[in-house]
Image (cartoon, rainbow, N blue to C red; front, side):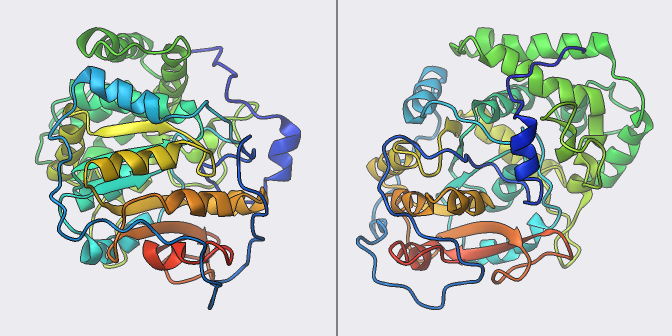
Length: 404
């Protein structure tokens, strides 16, 4: 699998400037049509803020949910593309999360969660873990990079092509399914079995067979009119999974030869066998039931990837308009630490105003990742902390700076 595409590579000078900051899925470029005068980024939670120019769009209290039970293949693609903006760039590919404590907020999210709602997020597979816990009726993943859409199209095909978790991982990593694994195997047993491939070269023939199956599933089975850049984009991300298998980390892709290569970071396997603070296994591969939540959503075309800058003029606002048209409510919006970069670029206020257009209520939650000490949440020394924040309260601070 030599000769990886360089379409995601960021100039070395840019990477050096941001080397001290944590991972994110944000853009650093101000969109062309944006409101002026964004706020500065504070380092701690705001205790007070000025009254906002507008208030969050609350969902009708007694509205009957009319989200579709499924989308046709054609409607899925049309919705994804019509909500999207032109793709942007970021300093890394973000093929895998580096947020090892992300499960710790799930008990809080479940307390606030209500059935029949919509989950929103950014980035790769960490969304799957939150989705499998919250069991939303529909999902929108908004990311500035079209590469993230290609990543989710890869996952979409693999969920469709796989019969259970072991089959799914065999196809994801292009490793033969280890003997003895069944649908009832524990996640620990599954990754222990796949660990026999650690450090071994990928199976080139199996990789090519699986890659062609992914493309055929998308283009022939579902008849999705992929853009010219999408097939090379899917191959680009899939090559990393094939090269490193369960040992893949956040730092192994992007940049010239990888952003730090093998520096200390959780592997795919580490993230899947991680637990919440009470020791409960909650990853999307922790059980067959969790995995089936994603497989079902993908089969119904109800996990929709969208290309867009959080502070851009279209994507979030268009998602909000579509949700309001369908009398839907956002249950949770996972932000990673995108806001850090929006503040660095002076455009956090634009994101806040965009989010005012989402249908939310007192139970809707932002999920943020940040370096410890910035607010309520969970984490560890040197790692990203996760916290949940009521969206209605945060978005009232749109004229007063970042609520963090």
